[in-house]
Image (cartoon, rainbow, N blue to C red):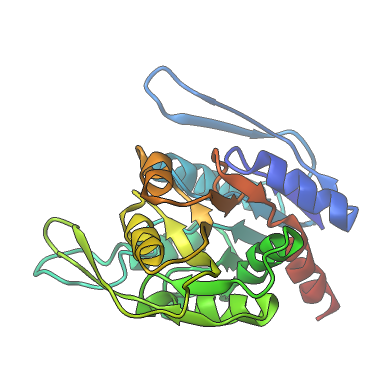
Amino acid sequence: MKIIPGPSSTELGRKIAEILGVETVSVAHKKFPDSESYIRLEGEVKGEEIVIVQSTGPPQDTNLIQLFILADAAKDLGAKRVIAIVPYLAYARQDKRFLPGEAISIQTIGKLLKTSGIDELITVNVHEREVLEKFEIPAKSISAIELLADYFKSKGLERAFALAPDEGAAEFAIEASKVLGGDYGWLHKERDRYTGEVRTEEKNLDVSGKDAIIFDDIISTGGTTANAVKILRKQGARRVFAACVHPLMIGNAKERILQAGAEEIVGTDSVPSNVTVVSLAPLLAKALTEKIKG
């Protein structure tokens, strides 16, 4: 097995390779003046099982195209099998047709993954696991919530209240509470299908005088998380923290959440950002080790 750390996940790919003790194949890459991507593999892949590590956060389209080119190049150069580790899978939230004529974009991405030569996909906390069942290649999502909860536990936040900002993320609060040993709960939110505006309904939570941590898969513009922070503060939480697997942190998301009353925002290196603290490398190395052992 050899690992190709893609342009968007170079450090993460190298960390995984170091844990596993396997060779990496470096990638030479650049943008042409017209913004097209140039890719060259700087090592031998013929006859090898290749693992490409390439997250597809912003700029999503560029990172996806680079992933497709890397996979196709590896197969064209003789790789016997290509596994793609894509911690953040772009377009996964475009999984339903809400309005007439809308494209279900994640279905298109699934087809392109196969066409480019990828034999198997491993992703992390995909927005809806059901979307992977429609892919024509084996695809699985693993959870990094325990890693995030372990981080807070190591910082002395045992027994903290774990909150999910909506029902769809309830499983994250439950998973985190098993590590932290405290209570958990979730809120209800509604999003306007046309404007994208989020409204969060307040509910009574047993957080007065307690530390609380909000767990979610993605922080994008920060609106959902900021709303949850405000509710926790209003109900008397002692300290409030925010944690997510994929810190997209669009625009002023960080400031928005901190201004709402959060002490700290913690993300993983799924999408490198100014809140990245926890590395996915041990989790992904474990997934590959388990795969090798069968």
